[in-house]
Length: 113
Length: 112
Image (cartoon, rainbow over all chains, first blue to last red; front, side, top):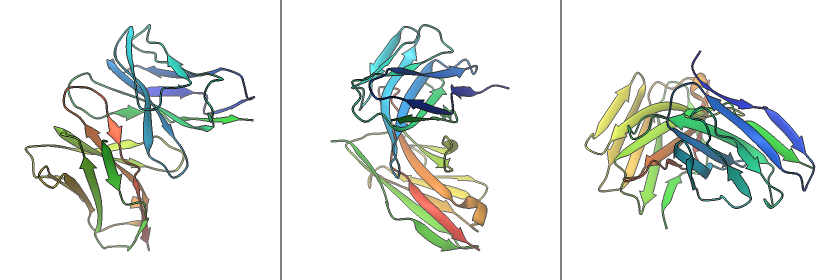
């Protein structure tokens, strides 16, 4: 089945630790995105990538880092510099330049204790 | 600053009635506008896309309008059903980049 997969679904980390969230897609999409969602809030863009080996900061990039070494993969690292990392993280992908729909993963709920 | 605004109050509606949601935007010139549905604890799912030169788009019981003069989109669910209860998100696709921006969403509760 084609789709976009995030793992893990739930993640617990101690304060001060870096953690990496996985996002993989087999839709052959060029563009990939990371969003953060807090309770009762909309999606805020963290980073996005339009092509392999290139990515741009979104609205709330501080404390996060990404890489795009392969078309299929766009991992997000939540660093210790992120002051309030507990949130629901969503990864999405879509075709480049076609202004088409975005496909989302099932999300990773990160809790920092 | 750029804003995408949706009503923060939940819309409670009787089954069978039409639910209407509003999306207003400022400081954007979108060529496209999209609507998504999100259920609790899940990722959003695409519903409809409307282009700037389209006034209206329909899909089954859903209808979307797009008024670039008013900078507003309306999303209608006709003959609403309890299964339509969810949060609906408006998303803009600005010109010149691939940066998809979302509103905060509007919750709909359909009462049987």
